[in-house]
Image (cartoon, rainbow, N blue to C red):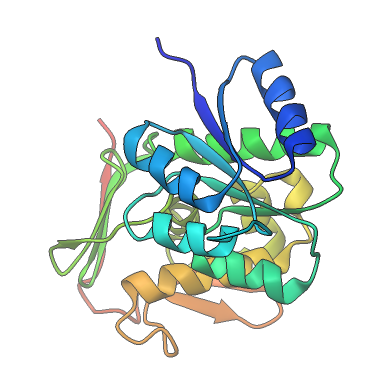
Length: 243
């Protein structure tokens, strides 16, 4: 079986070498490049399983690389940045990044986040207890990891799918911020409410006719979110058990 392949994009050679050595020591194949142009070329030609992407680079910066990749690919992306400004973090997450880590960072923390990103990808391929769910025009085939809206497939990243899966698998139940953060991202993300807000916004843009007035994912102020079934339509729900 081919090894998992990770693309490291950073113009700081010392950081690239450090990341490459630690990733290879854990059994990953690693490709390193120093600019956005090279990163885009690699992603077009190679089967990359994860991208670790620096923001501050000459030429095409990391933010633009993330935006372009998300136009056609769902590969997990972890952003590295020397800037810890919350606006930068939110912007990257809204563009499609799966995680954001501020420099300087610990190798153990980065490796934990790499595992989390792959866990999302793996979990997205695993069917929950029910194999299919439908509500109004929205249909989720958990077994096939396929989401459609009015018959048209909705393209979700692994993290977006994991979030939607958690909500839809618990229809009309309120899931708290902490519960969703720990189930989707992991124990260490229990206080990252900004992550949750951004990703809920991303999912809403893809499944809601009016994201500002959502029909499916309802905010419970100060508590969490609920996937609304009864408010969608009278005959909305069809849940099939897995065989």
